[in-house]
Length: 199
Length: 199
Image (cartoon, rainbow over all chains, first blue to last red; front, side, top):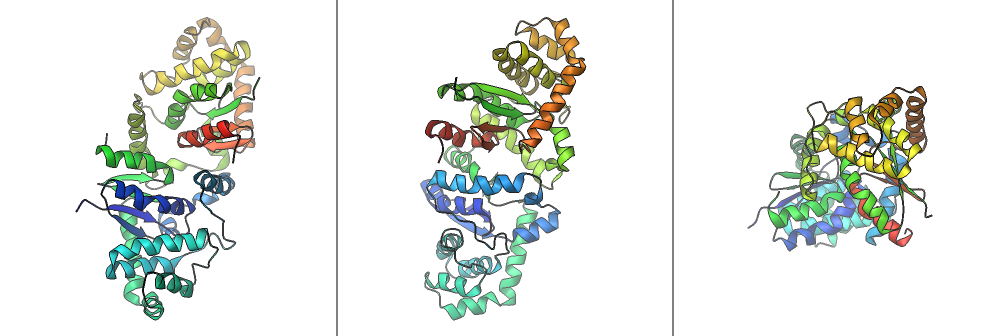
């Protein structure tokens, strides 16, 4: 099977959401599977000593650019009143699901992104996460138990460490055959990379 | 005449260079003139307390993404050994030229960008700047005198202040009818904005 594309993101990242809408179809056009790799951007920023949205001017631009980019794509997107916030439960769920049925991890993650950014659902809440996972055929009680399982918690920490070690410093980051692309606005170059093998 | 597009940039910005190659033709397709508005990004970063390239991981990504983006466009681009550096003389020259012949300011700026990023010329050097301006029909000695004129120096300071006051926090920034677009990777949205009047 062709090498997977690594899709690194945090559920609280709206540009991650915009990329999530496109990534599976884009990869499929080039016969590639996608490995959905959520990490905790708060932990990453803390480790790197880096707080992009506190940079002067950037927050206001970001709050304007995100909905403008969504409208340009015809995508429904509303900033939740609770933004920014840590979205830990859905990230844990992705890895737990991936270990059971890799094909469902992406479908769950896409649904979770949509729930938060388009449907106004409280994605920090394990109950909501379990409901979304139920849509992929997982029993709610199993999901709720997994979200409190130390192994699952440690897995997300390890994945966040791995993202930092791989040089990831924002969301989304997409890695194709070792080549890194940062931001939903690099998907065009990324697709060209897949099509041509690089330049 | 249709409203001008404001093209804010610093000559030391490679993404500014990539935008400079496209901006005039893009604007012309929509019957718009371009106001080339260089500012000093070092002064801006200092004022904002903001040093993007010192953020962990970002410099390495930037040094990889810039030439990759240039190659994707078929544009010759080489990081000068002196990068990053303040490029004050060409920025002053743009405003001095604009006051004499606005149509030549853009042509000069595009040539200056190319000289620095594609031709390996020392754009911090007033002599080189005067040579490039001579290509637009200005006498070298007039240019060299202007670069030391306090009024011209103050003008660039005032333009940098104006950019900061307008909410600019990086290079390039393009403002179309009050709508701000940050980065050479927003040119597609910017063109669509020109074509449709916004969304």
